[in-house]
Image 1 (tube, rainbow, N blue to C red):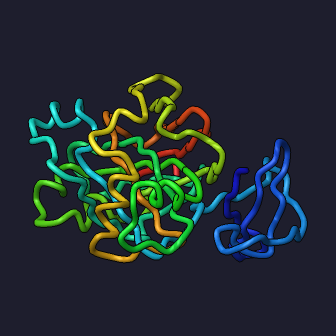
Image 2 (image 1 turned 90 degrees about the vertical axis):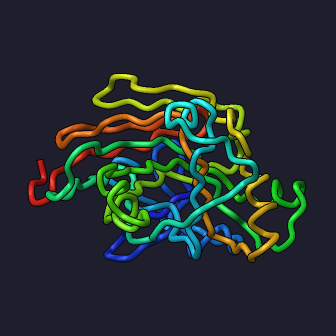
Image 3 (image 1 turned 45 degrees about the vertical axis):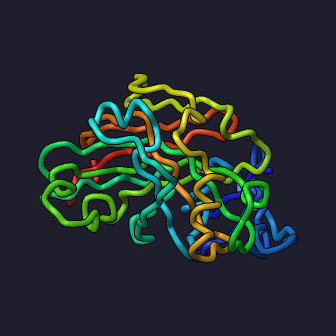
Length: 256
């Protein structure tokens, strides 16, 4: 199944994605088995971030080639940081490059796990069973800010810097897929999605040793490659078996 959230009449509504339309639902499929309210054609959908997570976890330096490119040390154990919900935006919504950003402004294509149950001290098998489904994230980064600041508070958490969508796919072997990054239709990166140092379930096991994970939490799994973005670009991230997340890039104060 594919589930998403769309804007209908000024409010967020969950939906089940079909071939031609989205069936609007009475509530979140993560929380239960909602009934159908109606439908909206796919062409008319205003896509929202697929979930607003209670906690937004993000993994860094989790692909060997990215680690080598950054001349960083390979992590000895799974670790995750945090991102801010205000940075989330949906499929087809613009990524806005702030006027103050100089230097590298980059896309990072990432697999995202959506947690479906409450977890503490999870085993590896329990971690696998806890994932409700998978979606796609674009970890947009302003590198100059990243190097200037003591934390990632603005370099990765500014408004619109975290597109996520277009839907949650519940029936896919996410780690057996291929991630492809395109800018204006040209392939800029392609890599095996599962070629990670530590997989999502390793991270869930480690996280839940120390904290409780909740339904709707998301875990972004890092990227192997990055590429530069400029206002006027359209960036597409495809993970085979899941879908394509597409967003235009705008400059602040200029919608074109």
